[in-house]
Amino acid sequence: MDPKGKGRRQFIKNSALGMIGTGLAGGRALAASQMPSRPATQVVPDEAPKIKEYRTLGRTGFQVSDISCGFILDEGVIRAAYESGMNYFDTAEEYPGHHRVLARVIKTMDRKKVFITTKLEATKPEPRATKSEIKEGFLKRARKALEELQTEYVDCLMMHCPEKAETLKDEGFHAAMAELKAEGRVRHVGVSQHGTFWFRDPEETMEKILLAAAEDGRFDVFLMAYNFLKRDNAECVLEACRGKKIGVALMKTAPIAIYDTLRSRIEALEKDKKDVDPLYADGLKRYKEKFEAAQEFIRAHNLKNPGEIRDAAIRFVLGHPDVHTACCQTQTYDDLNAYLKLSGTKLTVAESAKLDAYREDCGALYCRHACGVCEPSCPSGVPVNTILRYQHYFASQRREKEAMGYYAGIPGVRADACGDCAAPCEAACPYGVPVQGMLLVAHETLSMP
Image (cartoon, rainbow, N blue to C red; front, side, top):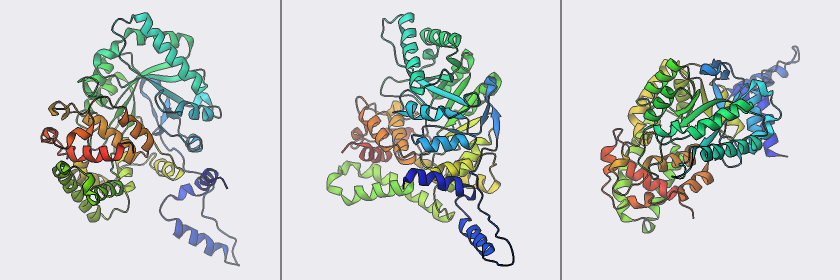
């Protein structure tokens, strides 16, 4: 039997019951069916959970589902997401194979009822490139993306991760967008940002770039990092979006560490001490102290799995009045089910208190996306935020091969330069993150065998 087919059928049959209460509900159904004097009563619903809330995506006017579809490679999961009512689907030219996977599902969609967005990386042009040459480069890439997606148009084409506010004004890019709009191939233009790549050139913050994009006026939708641990340099961006009626889609909404993965990595490093540089000891010691404090939080709150905090984290961002949709990146029907159940729900007082406690006890284990405050202090120029974002892909999003490939492709120094360092990055971090130890663990995790 096809395991994917089996997973999909199980999703459709049982998903509305969720991850709790299935045993009790099933027992009641069985007891009712065995009573001879009464007709059988089935409590198992025959429909999957559905999207319950839609919001206006800024000045696009599109009614977007509050939970949306990010980088998902399983065609069946994407189709189930669409059938559940999700109608915002995000992709990018650099997501390996994702355009073609999504294309197969787009064929089955009511195209007028979905919002498809893709992204083109804002690569640095050649020094002598003309506006016309830059325009043609973007046109070629955009048309390739449309061909791969097998769709006549995309609802939004985004400039992907510009590293400076100046890049937003690239007239070659905007000339290409104007031509594609005139052809009916692109309906809106957007920008995505989750932090810069320090190893290329010391760049600007997400806050500065997105505020400049809001002021520019030519970008209709933002895809940005925001979560309950990362609020300080994103709140002003959300406020600007409200004022300019810019649509807001979120990524990196649940900064929850997978503790079992981290624990096993620490144990493996300690077990095989002969292969671990002894200079790693101090950095790993500080990291482990933070990790053990997080374990105390888990025990104190009787958390059975990270999903409990993840759900509260997503409800937190959906509770913000200027947020329109949160992209999920799940590869399984069970995870999709869990996300769907959050649609239209509100953060409870108890969950809010739990997030506050998590921030206090576990917040130091999260390197804030799009932060980069510590990077100027590094004497070796290690791209701290980028490396720990790749570690997040590996540990929290199950994108292991992709994360390892990204890490291998970093030019210049990587985290193996951190072992004999005095760790000025940790002194510079305003959040108490054990940066050096996390970088060392990331290096061990992400290095190709």
